[in-house]
Length: 252
Length: 259
Image (cartoon, rainbow over all chains, first blue to last red; front, side, top):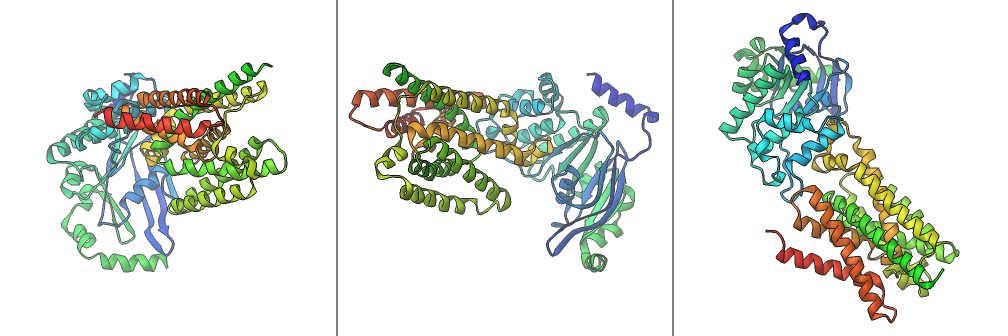
């Protein structure tokens, strides 16, 4: 596939990267009436990095991911480098068991909507490793199989960035490992940048090059080495009150 | 034009409407619009009544109230999200009451239950044209509709304009009701969208099978219903017969079909 080869050569030759960030977030806030969820987030991300969004429950990780996808209103700037294609793997999606829809039909529908050739479905399914379940009804798939179909769905259209929400929360250990392998392969073989929401710090440590931590309305950004240290994590997870007060001062 | 020709026109238009109903109903069922089908078909009643009072074409009146009602339902659904079901209950009763009030007594039964009428060439072409338009527009939007009913969020992330698609679907849905109201009546038009689709869902595991089975069940109900009505004679309305046959097919398939 010529398109994938292009990505590979991009990877190997840093000169084709022009140094502009893939994603720039400036003064971005998400709020609901009477409540600010994220206040004034600022960070940028280069290509071929992997970003983990971490933080306590309700800190707005999923909202931020959706804002990046254009599914959630926000103020400020979320700017993707022009032409960047996004793929989305949502959290807790499940198929209605009675939905008369085969996995292949779902993938083909996306291929057609995105003007991809029909062969794209077969190629992506083979790459993900779900060719054998394409003729199954979506409602009849196991959790792990369904997740594979969702990744295949996200990869149709050959996205530059995969945005993945809590990928392993509903999977057993084996399926979780399989899923992580896929994400790593996407980075290596397809040059895909991965942005991942996760609770699982072990997973984040083994996977992310950068970490954005959301806590009490504030966003802290750094490399994995800077962020995943006991001091920072303790501040974020154990004593969120301090951040909370600080956040309120800022937004008031 | 001979009586036979105009009967034939009426019969063909009913078949075209049945095909469109099977197709639209399939998507409506998956979008969980089962209740909406009934409400939308009731919206036609006040329009028919008002048109009769002012001696206008009943189809025009039905079209007007259907259009307004559809936009109101779409707007409410978009704005509130939660209240739709409650609103549907209110609209259901209100449009039936308003329709019963304004429709002249002599015409009420026909407006409610429909009658297969001999059609003029013009009526025939309008009905068939509308049915073809509905089917064509729907098949063109098939993939986008599949994405939206699987997950509106994933559809939006894939570049589908979800709100616009929902409005387009509701308009096609109302147009289908309008085409069916003539021979099924305002009370029963919604049934021809929902029952064959439920039958199709019991038989199919893929979306293509589903659509084909639904259309087949719908067409079969209409052919059998019209045939039986013509045999019974004596002014029996076609609508109830068609709906009962569609129901019988659904029950048979549910008990003896797949799984």
